[in-house]
Amino acid sequence: MHIPETSTIQPWLIFEDAPAALAFYKAAFGARETYRLEPVPGELVARLSVGGAEFWVASGGVKNPDMHQSVRFVVVVPDPEAYFEQALGVGATAVFAPRADHGWFSAKVADPFGHHWEFGHEVD
Image 1 (cartoon, rainbow, N blue to C red):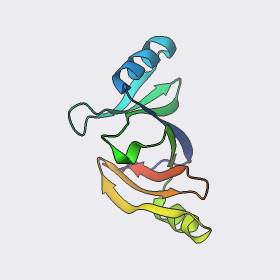
Image 2 (cartoon, helix red, strand yellow):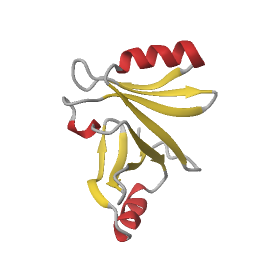
Image 3 (tube, rainbow, N blue to C red):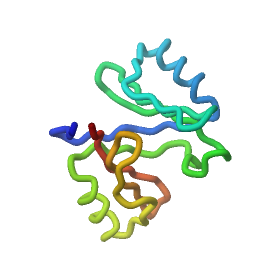
Image 4 (cartoon, one colour):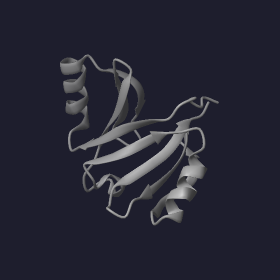
């Protein structure tokens, strides 16, 4: 299992045309893909790295109700459940409970201001 020793916050940017955004960031910033998922035809999720700084590019829009915002945050932590429970305890709303899915163990909350925060780490 891959659990990082430190935590990071990675922006998750949502686009109507994620493949075009992916191509732009590769050409403009020299970004390289470190993770890619195409859950259904026409949808794309990719993690990019620019000099070790990581961010996500994902398809969005009406076809994917989980992607209704233009940005959300992925917080890479060793214990997603602890962060999930702590956030719920101070007013966050559960979006999904801790689970293993698509090579990650993660949980997601919505803060009182409407932003989504996903706590998780990759699993082998």
